[in-house]
Length: 340
Image 1: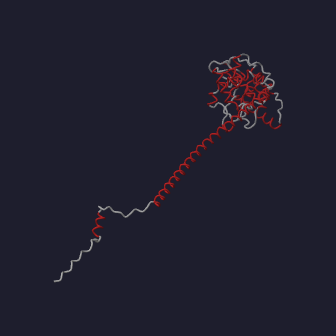
Image 2: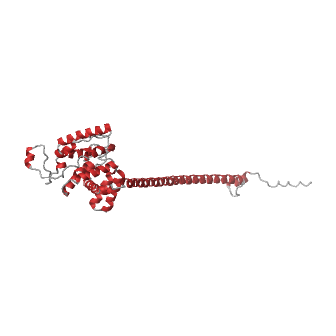
Image 3: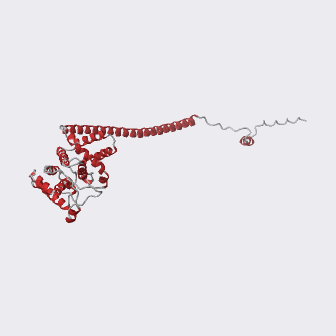
């Protein structure tokens, strides 16, 4: 069924309804007779697995739910139109005559708002379920209960604390431990719901069903210790817990920012150093190349010209010798003839 009031907090309505329920007689659960079920088709049927019926919740029918939703819609309109609620005296009458309607009012009021059953509770759903799982496993139960106290006192407003006290007072009307635990089982799905998309809670999702055992333990712990959790001075303790939590969160964020900045610096520094080494290597190679080129140029300029020298035995030398003119001394002229 769609929520009764989509965007309004449920606490004023729940408190108003609970204030009219404490005159109920003890919630005794007689066994349902098969004759009454056969006569009245709308009468609640026996529960499975041999459970006995609890009239306060297990006697709810579809007509009871329809009536209760109509009453809640009227109460919401009255409260948010005038800013206050008139006494609903008929609730006292219904508490004595129509227990199913009153029981349905309790459950429907906690499911009227899709964002949360009571203000502040959906924000701590996951840590509460984690602590409930630890309690189921028997892991340091004292510490788990103290952590539950820390969560509820630091997140829930005063009106939510009053609702939990009212539920515990209503639970105290049950006649035995079995019915007391049955009370917890019936209100837990409505009271503790996992957050979903768009800031809304999702009732009976797969996650909700898987978390139900832990959720029941958490709700039982909250109601069993409601007077201890919300004893005198609890609001001041909750404020101190919130401040300490905020301080720890801020310190953690600052530390993370410093680590990220250091990592960025190291990464950038490594890249800069590698780039600088590359530039230095390139510069050294360039200088070395220029120096080598200058040395070669100087060597070629200062070296003397090679003489045009040929070996005597070389063909070129022989050719020069054969082609050059002979330099023999001129022949001696013959002596003149003697006269006579």
